[in-house]
Structure formats: C-alpha cells, structure tokens
Image 1 (tube, rainbow, N blue to C red):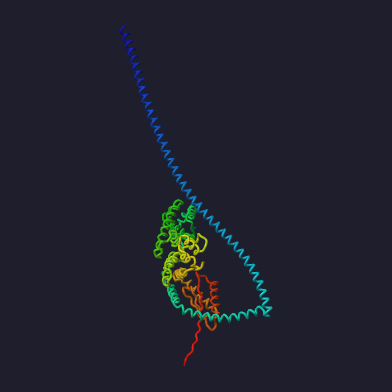
Image 2 (image 1 turned 30 degrees about the horizontal axis):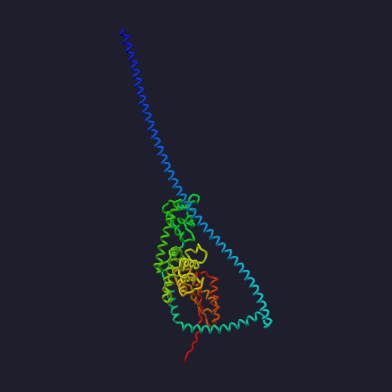
Length: 509
C-alpha cells in the first residue's frame, strides 16, 4: 500500500514537474518571442532609417547631378548662342558685301553703257570735224596734224621758257620756304634703327612623332584646333616643323603660343586644346594692352579712347614688308611732331595723326575698304577731332588734305617707310632694283647720266641740253615713269626728276 502511495506520489510529482517545466518553457518561449519581436521592430526601424538616408542621399545626388548638367547645358547653350550670333553677323556681312558688289556691278554696267554711247557720239563728231576741216583747209588729216603739232611745239617752248623764268623768280621770293624744305629733306635722310620683324610663324617640335598626335585620330585634334583658333595648321614633310597660317595676326600669335604649350606638355586632346587656347589668348590680350600703353607713352598721346587702345595694341602683331606696324606708328608720330614744330604747325594734331594713321590695318582683313578709310571711320566713331581724322584719311590721297598737319603725316609716313632698313629687302635685290632704275633711264636718247637716290624712291636724270629741250624734258619724265610702271615691281611710288642745265661760257681776253 505504501508502495502504491509512493508510486502515485511519484507520478503526481512527475506530472507536476512536467506541468511546471511546460509552464517554464512557455514563459521562456514568450520571453524569446518578445525579444524577437523587439529585435524585429528595431531592425525594421533601422532599415527604415537607412532607407530614408539612402533616399535623401539619392535625392541630394540627383539634385547635384541635375544642377551640374543644367550648368553644363547652359554653358554649351551660351557657346552655341555666341557661335550662332557670330555666324549670323558673318552672314549679314557677307550679304551686305554681296549687295554692295551687285550694286557696284550695276553702276559699272550703266557707266559702261553711257561711256559706249558717248564714245560713239564722239567718233561721229570727230569724223564730221575731220571732214569739215579737210573741206575747208583742203589738207589731209596727216598734213593738218603735222602743221598743228609744229605750231603747238613752238608755242609750248615759248610758254615753258616763260614758266621757268617765273618759277625762278618765285623761288627767290620764297627762299624761306625752300630752306624749310631742305630741313625736311635732311630729316628724311636721317638713318634710324633697322627693323628685323618676321611675319612667318613656324614652330619646332621635338620629334616627328608628335605630328601624329597633333593631327589626332581621324584628324580630330587638328580640326578642333583650327576651328577654335581660326587658323590653318600646315603639317607637311618638313622635319620637326609645323606652320601656323592666318590672315589675322592676333589669331596667328595666339595659336602659335597655344601650339607651343600643347607640344611642350604632350597632352593633346580637344578639351585640352580649348583650355590652352583660352590661356594663350589671354596672354596675347595682355601683351597688346601693354604694347598699346607703351606706344601712347612713347608717342606722348594721352587720353586715347580704350577701344582705340585695343586696336593700337593689335598693330604689335601686324607687319608690312617686315616692318612692325606699331613701331612704324610710333616713329611716324615722333617724326610728325618734329616736322610740325620745325615749320610752325600744330604738333599735338600731327603727333596723334601720325600715331593713328595706320589704325585701320588692325581690322582691314575683317572690314571691307582701304585701311585709311577704315581708320578714319573708327577714329571718327570714337570722338577723335576732325583734323586728326583728315590726317588718317588723306595720308594716301584717298581724300583731300585739308590741313598742313595732314601733309606732315604723309611726309613722315613716307620717311618711315622709305628709309634704308625700314622694310625687309635683300641686298642683292636692292642693288638689282637700283641698277634697273638707272638702266631704264639711260635707255632713252639724250640722257647723259642717271642716279637712283633715296633708297630707290627717286631717279634723277641728267640730259644733254643740246638734244633735249624743256618740252622734251617733260615728255621724257612721263615716258620714263611709264616704263618703270610697266617693267618693275616696287612698293610705294618712285619720283622721276629730269635735270636740264644750259651753260654759256666765254673768256675775256
């Protein structure tokens, strides 16, 4: 019985233990379930927070990328607009030029038609006049021509002798003026510093392998460089040399500097090319500004308009026959001031007119017209006085010279351009040109001797007075000038002077 009670107690104990164990396991399970639920909630919160951070970062990145893209697109749009504006201006200039050419052609056609009608009328009148003269004088055309020419020759010789006597008297009366001309001639013969300015732009490269990199794949690099710089790049078989070619000297200089930087650095690609070209252009702009300031200081021309200063600086990269145009402008300004002071003219007007006389050459390759008329229009636009504008416009006789200062600027320009060493010319070519001038003069009958002076700007011909009279001297000077124009090439103009001297010698015994 006790045994049964023990067994029952054991069973009851086991049952109670099982129940307690189950309850304990249930409690632990609930606790673990709560922990898992808390962990799940925490993980969800952390995931949501990370997701929010990722979304915010993604939005910030998207905004930043969009702003960068918008800025880049705006920059490209600005470049495209500038390019469109430039092309539109160029198109308008071309259209205007074509319209002017068409109008000029129409005017020439009308003028030619009018000239043809007048020529036909003149031929008819001439035929009628000759028929009437032959009927009245009972002479042929050849006989009448000989009679008229003989009478005209006699009358002309008498008139020329009278003119010569009057000129001698006038020369005695104006001896002071003649003395001033002698001073000007002395200044004209003054030797100045020779010029050695080169106009070609060639660039040395370390090796011919760089030529391929300059050209780029499919010619991409060289096309970008030519398009951005506005020049032509000549890459030929010449070893280790490339050539930069352009009618615009400023573009040519900037392109040469940019190419030098690209070759030195070795990194040649479109983006790098554009950046280096901008750097080179800024350097050229700085040089032009400094040179313009130096020029106005040397020429003593203050208070010049900023736009004229920019144009003046562009002349630093412009040359003519090897002569630097900015140096030439400074020299003409100084000579004009000296000449004006010597003969009592306005030195300030002459000085400014001399400095600005070739200002049109800064843009004559962009604007239609001669550099004198272009320069006068620019000076007039920027408030330069009318007397200075006349100096600019008339220094090549494209308009009437209204003041003494205009004549002085023309003379100073001729002195600066004609002095020995001013413009590049080889010694062999110079001697050949001088000899050709003298040989042309000696080829005419009655010429005793000829001398080329003023660096070939003037030819003086001494004739035999027994064979050449005063009227024949005039004819000889015209024929020599015409033959020089037909057979020689030369810059500027050549003065032909025929000297006829008659001496009467007698001895008193």
